[in-house]
Length: 467
Image 1 (cartoon, rainbow, N blue to C red):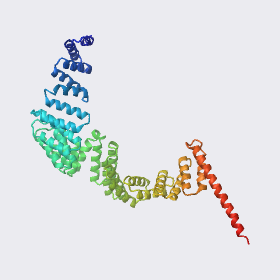
Image 2 (cartoon, rainbow, N blue to C red; image 1 turned 90 degrees about the horizontal axis):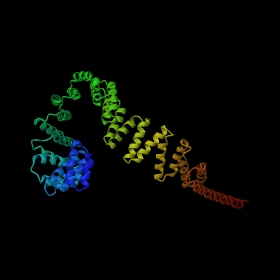
Image 3 (cartoon, rainbow, N blue to C red; image 1 turned 45 degrees about the horizontal axis):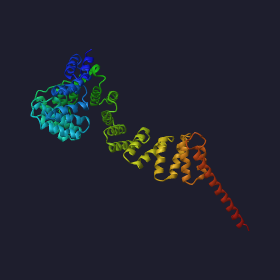
């Protein structure tokens, strides 16, 4: 077999013959990583640096994170091609997540080439690194420099446009994609991205002129007030798009425009099946409920919308507005109390938890929160009240029983403390049974001594009160 022959030549230090045998094997199986590695290694030993580089580069096609290969390529190019040396060093630093080092390497690579295609590729990588490391301005600058060349990949326009969108610079994003179209880069993704931006910029007519996407056409027609034309397309394409979230959002928009609010809500429910927990779901519902004059549900949905958008303070205000309209919705109360705690407003959260236990006295989560809060502020009497209510709802919670005993002890109510310690010890499986038993015995002895002392004083007082 050729593999044995190649290995035998290599073992006998007949490296040139081994190299030729491995080449034959490579011709038969060009995806065998072991063979490619042996060819790269032998090429280096024989001084065939360019061939070694070619084989090592082949490995990167299958394994772009192979650090050993980048190191080998750096050794090859260090003295003969500084551009490639810095490129490979930059790639090595990138996969090691040393992004600042990688950026410096790619800058040095740029200083060592005049080739347009090399400059474009290197600046493209630099732009991505800047974006990745939170430097959008520098990333934008790099992409703009690439646009000065002729043979620019479409991804440059798309990535630059997306950066402008993130920076909330929609006109600049539009301008970039219009430049792409002017250079005859008329691919589906560029064209449809531009159409979507025209819609965002309230220019549905322009979007309609360039889009080939049926649902984008529907959106444009709806925004232009041509709702019946839009509805006709929606009806024609129902079977094609019935599992598309976007289709149902457009149906919801159509019914909303027709003041058919119940039908619009049904379409939003369908949208939610295919786009779970999207902010758009709650935004659409909120707008529909507003038009139905249902302020309560409008506030609830604006609250959920703002939670998903990370605007917790606004969400709290929406929930509080809903609470002013209706104060007996436990779902709202639970959401509001949790949200108030998240933003650090514990006092108001506790007021809501108190409202919860008025409606649901056995709500152990609310009772625990209230007991903990009372403990935190040193109100052990208040803590004990809530612990007692919690105990009524959860009789076999031994951790709670022990906490009640300890709280009564803080209140110097020894009879109640003793009673609850005894309840705690009814379970012999509690982890600190012996320690609590010893503590209880000490507590009972102290209680007995106090009782005896009080009895002796009573006798003395009776003696002195005799006539």
